[in-house]
Length: 326
Length: 250
Image 1 (cartoon, each protein chain N blue to C red):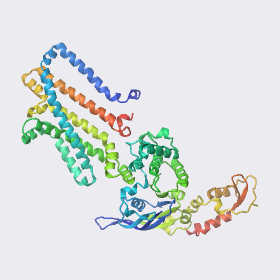
Image 2 (tube, chains in turn orange, green; image 1 turned 45 degrees about the horizontal axis):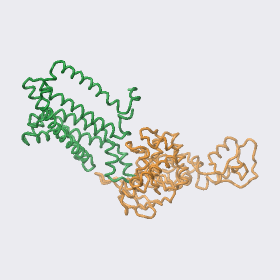
Image 3 (spheres, rainbow over the protein chains, first blue to last red; image 1 turned 90 degrees about the horizontal axis):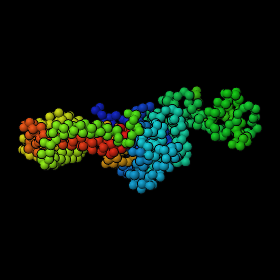
Image 4 (cartoon, chains in turn orange, green; image 1 turned 30 degrees about the vertical axis):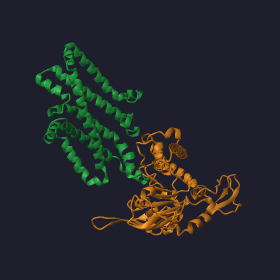
């Protein structure tokens, strides 16, 4: 669990001081992914870098699991926090395995344990250890390098992960793939992740909570559904975009809006949906087939309920005035 | 360079030495044919004695320059030296442009004659490329690597030894090779300020127009230059990590 309390960073300048982060407070629960979102220069990266003390806060406190980070030595602190940056920053003089073992080596693990851990992480990130462990970074593609960057951050199994636009340098197709892999991994690892992004779609996809920044101030801190359904002000509404209702659909699942009306007609030629499908698929099918309801089936094909237009509309309405408020 | 992909590692960098060896053999044959070789053999004892002196001059000044040059380059690259580093490097560049004979002469006025001022002069001449290349090599390590290293909890000493130096090593070696070429090339001049070495045979040979004596000094000097460059070239090839060694990324 990470708690920020009244965090500010003011850089001294000739004309007094430039406030980069202005009195920011929020809390990220253990195992949650929080995306820090905003335009460039909004203070999101500075906020992230204050958590591992690469930037010293001017005011305010940061608590990790209730412990004030001021109390620990910054170098020791950083070894307990995974760190991934946009430029990846793999050390070109070290092999992939050596790169992954950087923090374990600082923690003085023995060589065999470091090697084993590197191979384990490579396998977890869908890179064949035999092929990749002894390669140098200049022999990797962008996507491969980014996976190694994530593996390196996870090497000593830190409870907290800081990621500064980690997938920003990867091409769009590979980015989707890496995002999906990361989400799948995060389901079992349950790290507390702080993730900087300027991409609203990425934020909606990855986040349990989104902290949206403007000019150093925290504008809104909410779950993606709430942020999209009920933007706190015009800036947030503008930043998330006029298609924010469509964006919401990806984070709501059939199981959230399903009625257990098993009598719903299962018309010939009309596809069915499953409880774990998101509402993008449901809305697409509504439009494509001109129907008002779809049968919902379980993995064995038994009808377990139905999802109707009215139920979807009502779900979208609960978090605020919907599209008309924008 | 497609042929190089089929050769053993390191073989490509051996090519110039093979050519050089062939030329050397040709010269030896010419010397023997012209009878100069027999005249040169008369200086065998002098060559052995002066070679030892010569190697001491080169060895001590070179080793001192590598150690102190790397240390100075590292020191200048530290963040707290930021304000002074650039002016110092400018000064170093200016000092490099002073002819080596001038440096030796300056050392003679400071330290008198003998091996000591010779070693000091050679040290100064050799130091500068090493300082410059160490500094530039470390400075050109990308900022994001330092950021990643810091963010993972490396201490400043670990950042220097595990990230900065290994990534700067190739450029540093280039500086050291240049410096050692200057050192070996300048060492014969040490004779002019009483430093001894193979310069004694060369300069005396010139004065007396005794070509056998001249060559008895010049050939070992040339040989030493080739051997030193070969050794440092091999060191560069094998000691710089493969991931940051352009010579090994065919």
